[in-house]
Image (cartoon, rainbow, N blue to C red; front, top):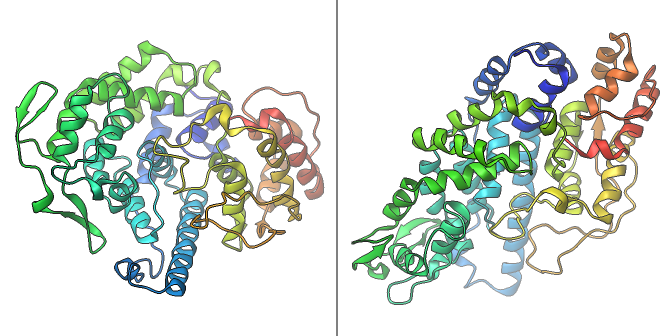
Length: 454
């Protein structure tokens, strides 16, 4: 099957965050297997994202610190989280390895957690990015021992004789089986298996004196169950593969569920021992993935929206606050999910205030306009992302020269511009004959409802 331009863009939107116009034109006419192989090849190289001095903050001293010292440490950690956020966004916007970053964003939403400690979040991000195209079981075992996750789901408080069920419950409800496929007794006994899992010197540490070594009955089998064995047993249940594949189908394909296709994908995932690459290959090379009903059927998440603009129009930021301001206003700040279930997505991305900024954001970035919007604040003094006063400039820098030159090589420039920027047919007349004309017409297209879809 040879892919049309729109189908190629569909692949690059769903397996990444779009790509340059030149890359789209070069890829048009290729088959999905070849393009997917190239995406994989580009994503093999892995680079850890590191915030300078992330681990120089000694959180063990926080309890003993004075009020002012605590205030300084928390401010430094918030600044570090903002820097880590920007590092990841910049990498998404500039790397050729977009498949790894797209999958990492999916896993960040699936294995959602947060922390006030930048070192914890840096370690968590490293784990999901390193494993995002590897084995789900390995990633789940590793994330379960991440200090950020242990802290977020209260496993520090999970001790012998007083088990805390929070992590065990979310492990089954949100990370593996889904609601309705386990009992309360399964949760209680799984929680006992995770007792003593904690943090020492900012790393995972099993506290033997707080761990329950007794017999536990889990899904009808009685043994001296350990936490790692709980995860292995959950992976042996094919329902875990079904649950994850359903979530992947909604994320990568369409909000409208196709149960038959999900079962087929679950079989691929399960039979390949939860290796992630065979599963995403089955999705992105399937003929049905490119059906018209799936193209332009998803509302762009705030990160999709921002990174799609950056990759298509070579937009960069010269300050740390600009991108995080956009995330916060649109409702998706990396490392700051609303809860352990992650961001709901879909129509939840759109409300009256976010739609206003979405319709103006391209114009603001391309013209470096002032932002005349009140900053959304949570009211939490410990909020990791804070702004002082009104942020007037986002600090965007745009270079459209290469884009303009590429477009002018086409006979029908206006049609090509619309075809590249939107994924469904639209009725709008544009003429991109000069740089000013190009900017104005991009802005016109960006204000349409169709521009919100990918």
